[in-house]
Image (cartoon, rainbow, N blue to C red; front, side):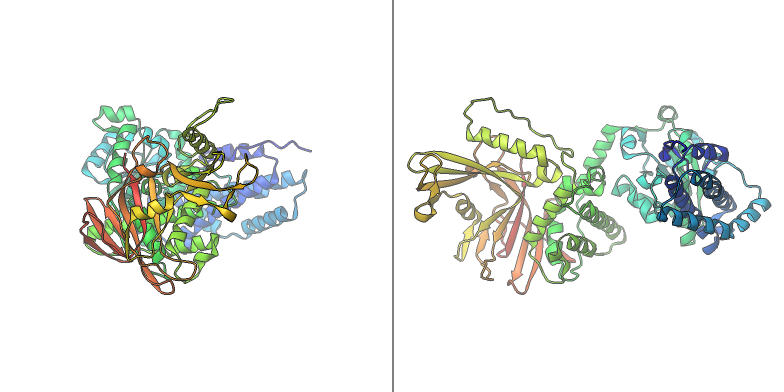
Length: 633
């Protein structure tokens, strides 16, 4: 039997000036399934091209003859490769290897498709009647660095930097009209599915929301210049080129001047061009962080309990920036059976990016368009059926679900510094040292962005009243659920005092002391041992008897948790930035939010309606249900 030679499909060009190189590469592959998968992918490319050429009937005055030539040339190139793989290479490999039922069915389908295809006749007729070059369009239509510099200074050229975001941040030309786009699906042929050629997919491949907003204005530019660091990138540019052409064809817009440019940053600097590196990229991100999003959300299918949570999460800059810039993508844990395999965080990111674009459009066109969280609601409903109904659910339960799901979606150890503590043998540890070791052990298993941002730790100490033996245990929390008194009003510190008050265990409720070996009276104490960056306090208004506690809870702009801490390191002060309110009762109610935005301004956001308001010494809202605080360093 012929030995199977491993072929790195990731190195396979999308099209080749020399078809022999392609044939030589796949002549070494003796795996029929691998060959058929590549054939199927190339067939999908071919079908996309023929759709542009024939189904949509692009007019030469819209597309331009040069671009039309490229579409025909690329389609012919794909057909030749498919012909070689299906009708030449596959039969030879099948002589020495038996295909299973699925592979044989795929081969038969591909073979019949090739034999019955009539599009190739029209393609060959066009190529015979027109002098079409053999090289790719972008390889033959380049622009010099000085001309590119002139176009960018005039603002007439959109520059598409086709590299990974990491390489882009390490160094790129600094012009106002540069976008970094690098969809992962465009850089490999070893996936059986064909990367989506829709323009919307290209927008998702942008390095940031700022870049996607700029790319949306592509029709306003006279020139589109795709820049690459060296000529070896040209074989990867065809899907990008086809996406751009397809966008103009489908929208009936005349295709502008599209060119390529090999950019050397040192040469760019010598002609007066500015070069950006990691430092300037960091400054740009910081500036972008300060821009708050103020966009309403439609109340669809009783989704107000989701709307208010989203509005209160937006001021968390680290979270918002992670979602806006898609920096979470490399940290998705697709193998975790507990989470949503990235669906939840991807859908949430899409919603936040849509809200940002809507905010920009509202500002530019003086309008008040709202967005919809229905896709997020449906996505969450797939993970937890509770959120799949049209009933109004509890906003605190949704927040806990969202935090836990995003935590499971993100790979452990993503961009979090894990503290290292050791426990010397035979050393008696203090409670503070035990707390540090417990948190370090937890972080070793669970550390990621959500843990680092939202989770804290408490210590629960049980002390025997007879022998004074003490047992310590540690709990991790994402929110503090505070019990409300039955009176007409109280202060939030009254609720915290109740939460952390010592609890006497006597009689039947006594503690089985490990030292005394019998049930003894004991005291239980709870303290904070680790403060989160974002603290969420739930004012628990709903009892198990389906009644609502309408106690008016007063809460300050700055909250001090120092008296409830075990240690004294670092700040224990928190600043309020969001409030979720609930009006009505358990059967029929409504959620809204109060959110602090940039410019020292509070806003009341009730679904699609937003209004500014004044914050007094104590925020007066008798309907507060959840309070969002940010730790002050």
